[in-house]
Length: 421
Ligand SMILES: NC(=O)c1ccc[n+]([C@@H]2O[C@H](COP(=O)([O-])OP(=O)(O)OC[C@H]3O[C@@H](n4cnc5c(N)ncnc54)[C@H](O)[C@@H]3O)[C@@H](O)[C@H]2O)c1
Image (cartoon, rainbow, N blue to C red):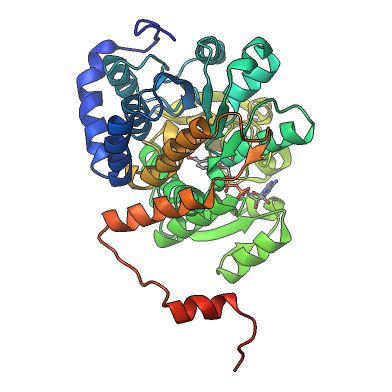
């Protein structure tokens, strides 16, 4: 594995504030703290080489410390060029976890960091967007023999991996952590909901009340963003391509219409679809002067930025994370955070309390991969239901909330078909 010198960070002197912020996040991560204690005692990952490509945030640092406590040899790189918290990267190196991640790194450096992580011959990959798996399958097939398995954190990564599996190309088992209920119901919905509003607010300082906010995509993340924008007093319009989700948005009380219609009336547009060119040239041409464009989906492809550039006669930075594009007809459109996930670019990503559950799933799935070495089929697996329920139980315990249990009579009744009214 890499020596503790094999890292690339912005500034090592940021380690101390980074440490303090990691400790602050840890206060809201009781499940992760419990797992860390158990991992430290049992060492379930002893000597296992793990490459993790994740947003380098305070919450990720807490996961990294848990894996290290469990005996893993961990190497970390960023899963997005703009999501790294440089003080956290510095603190991780100080904790002895080789980390290669710099906020604002260019595409070449971003892929160099991934390639560096992969070249450490990991036995487990931990992805957020499937860039490690993709690199191993396309450029470093020679290393695939070392792999026990991998985990995937986000919807877009799971989609890529399922498509690789369908094409017959997947070479080692992956657990789709995103698809655990204790992940997407909380992280995607409440985490993305709150932190996306936070990112847009920090970047622009706008008042949400009275604004027309267009949410493109009504998946779990879209649910959260629409809900929180409405909570701030915005008038929310949802656009969708999938009829059931569009219907759900209607019944949840939002206005639903094609984006071409919404384009002319929206004040703020947020893409959260995992799809490409959702906001395209005709939409940009129809928008009002002053419209704000943000993306919270995984890749920066949801807003057609090249089209925006082509339509523009000039651009300037209006404020940090706000790029003002002046169109040839004089209208101005404001693109936030270079079209990259705005909650991580301009804010701090999800609050620690939800990442507690997402990353508890990660830690337990990694332990499961190690325990099941050689037994799992080469495909994309769901998170074992026992892990999902264990995370929910531990989180409830930590919140001091107890729930009812079925009586033997109820258990029998719920399994039977004989009894009616
Ligand atoms: N910002 C973050 O921190 C964060 C956190 C979790 C997930 N994500 C990412 O957010 C994206 C969405 O995740 P999700 O879990 O909500 O996914 P999802 O699959 O549940 O929902 C996506 C929705 O977008 C819709 N859609 C697709 N193309 C569209 C189009 N052209 N116009 C309108 N709607 C369209 C789909 O029909 C679907 O309902 C993914 O890229 C995911 O990786 C980001």
